Length: 280
Image (tube, rainbow, N blue to C red; front, side, top):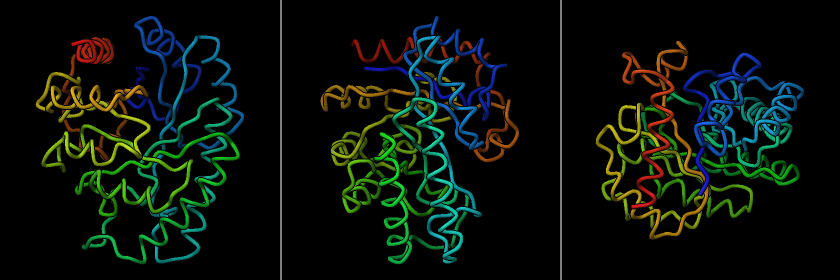
């Protein structure tokens, strides 16, 4: 098992000013970090990758899509822009030495049509993400498609949806993520949801119901970790938590109040909690 920490707790752009945080995460016992990929400067990520090698931290990455690069837009030029941006994000991940690019790359975050996904949108997403996965394969990167709850998107909103999408794509470099926050909102039976999608899962986000310290909320952690062990999962368990440090992210994730004492408290307690649950 590998334990990771998503850097969005501190920043959407990891730079030299965050090297101390990276060093602390290594000292606290994390195996790696999840890098936000919003800026697409390949040289910057190459430099960051070298620093992470020096510290001894592995890395995954996360990105999102906007209205300007929405893979399921009715506008063909916007879909083309989405593919171009995904390829650039893949290049950035590869430059940083990462092998997984995660996130809701299937559609624009926070954009709604007033109805569920259409067959045409499904086709557009499959086409665009399969082409992106071809580029990822050349760069030894796997795209990890994340479903979101119904309040953040309308395209993929359950483990079953995401698994069906990835099975239809049938591409070795296009798989899915299981995120405990979204599952807590959308799934009626966590164990059944996990068992039903696990042939496609390559990454797990550990996130509490209020996006703060894992283990201090009401997510059904006992079932979650029991099922992880039953399914013999041995990949990344990456903490995803958000605070008020990033106004744009706080607005997108609807974080209006501080729900943990300090970032260090959250990171250290989350790691201890995950290791305790895996050992029990």
